Image (cartoon, rainbow, N blue to C red; front, side, top):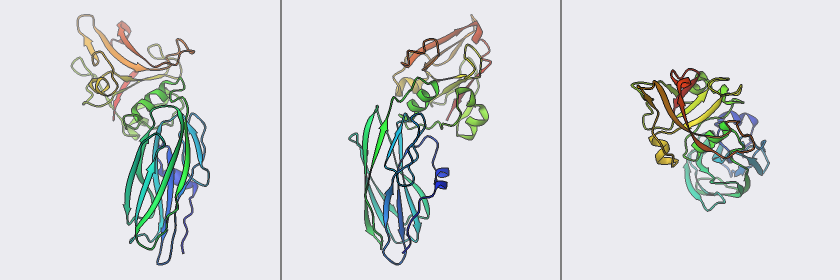
Length: 285
């Protein structure tokens, strides 16, 4: 009988934004085999959790959770039915047939607010010479924004199932090269507006540009998408040809004018200093 071993290299297969709630190990050959949901490594409260190994609890400020199964051995004649309850009233059932070796994303979930959630995973073998082991995991979501412009943008997008990977320590680290590598591309102003293609749009300030400090800044631009999905108000970016000024409304957090106030807010940027938009870039997924 072949058994599964969860190895640290599996972390390379997990997207940076994902909080991997459990990685079910699945194995089978021509003899009895087993499947179990492996717990995770705990992470610092300001970084995503990656479930791997033998731990059973994780705390994070990131509300996004993904569930991966892990298969090894010959599972060509096995069918598994995974039942996942997220602990906040949500649940999902996923059928996996003939999984290949490796990790497989089965389900995603985003929590609405801070709390301690019990994630229960059941594994039913519907076909094949395999066995399944159920598991229970604890996910603790702390303050999802943590007074950070980057965390606010990432978490707000994640609530709409839009991924902006973590990695750079500050907003200024989200360069055009980094954004391109992670599925976002830069759009440039054209004909008095900034084309968004009906998608979410993120605005990134370079370090020490247009009032940003050395860490730079990041915000969600108010567009038709933001008005529809986030309840934002105001126009999409527009250029006033009479005053020669840009008018850009954003949703943001942590502008550092009041470090004690971490409440996200909507703000309009306008004025002569925004005329050429130098030092800021706009990205859509």
